[in-house]
Every structure is written in C-alpha cells, then in structure tokens.
Image (cartoon, rainbow, N blue to C red):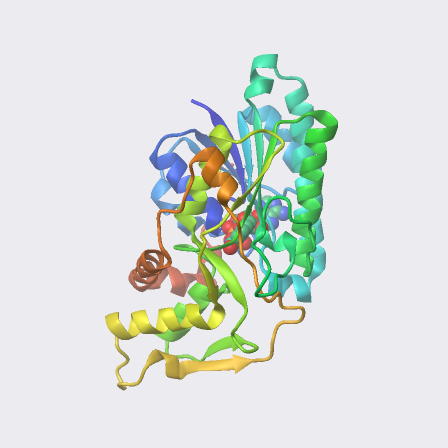
Length: 352
Ligand SMILES: NC(=O)c1ccc[n+]([C@@H]2O[C@H](COP(=O)([O-])OP(=O)(O)OC[C@H]3O[C@@H](n4cnc5c(N)ncnc54)[C@H](O)[C@@H]3O)[C@@H](O)[C@H]2O)c1
C-alpha cells in the first residue's frame, strides 16, 4: 500500500480527504497536524482503531518536526493542506499566516526535496507533492471580468491570500529549479461537514439554529464561487492520479452566489425543515455589519482545465450540497456544541 503524508488532516478539508482516502483504502495516511484551534480530532473519530491512519502532532513551520517525518514514513506522496485559513484572523494577526503558510510550505518542500533526491529513480518518478491552495490568490473581480483561469496573474489582497500566493510561488520554483514533481490546486470556497463555525455557512447555520442575529458583511453583495468539499476531495484525487507535474489546476463549482443569497438559502431551507417556534422567518434574523477591510468583491473560477484534462466536474449542485450540509449540521449539534464550548480541544487520540 502507498503511504501519503497529509498535512492539516484534522482541519475541515483535510479531514474530509482522509475520511475518503481511508474509506477506499487508497493509502496509509500519516496525518501531520499541529492541532491549532482549527484542528479537530473529533472529525476523525470514525477512524479510531484504524492502524493505517497515523496521527503525528507537529508544526510544518519547524524544520526539525518536518525532516524526521520523511525519513520515518517514506511517503509516496505529500498532500499539503495545512495552513492558517481564515481571512479575518489574517487581518488581526498576519504573522501566523506568514509563518505557517510561507515558512511551513517551504519546510515541507525543502525536506521533501532532500528525501526525494535520494529515492530510486522509479520512486522519484512516482513521487508527488500536491499543494492545496485557493482562488483568493488571484485577487478580486468586477462583475464583468471573466473567471480566474490558471493564466490569471496573482493579485492577492489579504494577508491570508498573500501568504498562500507566496507559498504557490515557492512550490512552482521547486519544479522549475529542481524538477520536483509538484502539483498545485487553486480552489474556490468550500462548504460541507466538519467546517469550523467561523466560516460563513456553518456560522450562519449555527446562529440560525440558536436564534441569534445573522451578521452579513457590508451590503451582502460580495460574490464567491462555492464547491461542496466532497467535490474538492474528488478533484484533488484526480490531480494526484493524473495531473501533469509542474501544473496548476483551478477547481471550482461554477456556482457564483452573493453572501446574501447563501444566507437566504440557509434561511429558506431551515424555514422548511425546522420552522421557528415563534412563527417568524429565519431571514428576520439577518443584520448587516461593518464590512471587512479590503473585502474582495467577487471570485469566480474557470475550471475547464480540470474538466478537459482530467474529466473532473462537480457532482453536487448548490441545492443538493447545501441540503446535505444543513442536514449534517442539524444532526450533529453535539459536534457544534463541543467546538463552540472548546471541549473538542481536550481530547487527544493516539498521538505518536
Ligand atoms: N476552506 C476553503 O474554502 C478553502 C478553499 C480553497 C483552498 N483552501 C485551502 O485548503 C487548505 C485546507 O483548508 P481548511 O479550510 O481545511 O483549513 P482549516 O483551517 O480547517 O484546517 C487547517 C488545518 O491545518 C492545521 N495547521 C495549521 N497550522 C499548522 C502548522 N503550522 N503545522 C501543522 N498543521 C497546521 C490545523 O490544525 C488544521 O487542522 C488550506 O491550505 C486552505 O488554504 C481552503
């Protein structure tokens, strides 16, 4: 069986990826995670007792933590998800973003290079370093602009997107300078189960279910492209299996929505499945709050390269994906509660 090092595997997308990889027995998974506030081992509870999921607590920004990983586990591939990922936090505390996203990616790459250069030529050819990145590196679009393609120039606007852009450039340089077999994916906004409730969709679902105001930034007209996390996982697996080394692939849902539309969808769904006891609509809870500084107006992703080269297309529509997602959060209130009261950080499962 292949061995994959997965960084950030206790986070939202990383845990969804690991659950898929282990349910299909695609590889032995070494889950390397610092377990910051965003890392939640309860996402991986169903893997308790699975000997092919090995959790290693460590920091990608510490060279020593990273270097021992490669020698010890001899990976066939690295799937690099770990990052500081929340734009608002990058505005109030950018240093962690530079440290983890830039220096952390550098250490993951540099240690991979040393390890890879000593592999047999057959294993060198098969090795892959897949860097998971974001569409936010391209900056903001006007309503008339075409969607971001892989050729769009980078114009990041927040410390988060700038740190991800820097990491993408370092990854690119390891292909052009050292011919390392790297791949980069730039994906739009994900939603689905196990997403930390500071991000728009789980935040709004939780606030609505607990009858709190639903705060929308500015005029609510900022547009994002939305993709269900399982479609992202499926796209990453395609890129890993068939992507051309040194290439970047944009992954998107072809689903542009304003923030207001997203919140309206949540409210309308909840009105249907769990009407409020006082008879009013969930949308009555909507309030508009001061806009985020430098808030990008619009993102849109042209994912035609994924479709043409790799035969990938999203399976979920926004309607089916949102219905599944709202359903999951409604049925997993205990997960929400343990994140919100902090108790999810108290439990540590089999850390080596
Ligand atoms: N969420 C999205 O909508 C989205 C969209 C496109 C791309 N991405 C990218 O996908 C990746 C995963 O995003 P996510 O939403 O799952 O993030 P997340 O914040 O939910 O999870 C991040 C994980 O990385 C871990 N981590 C943070 N710093 C670390 C460090 N220094 N060393 C080791 N582990 C560390 C955390 O403990 C956590 O488990 C990120 O690289 C992000 O930029 C996210």
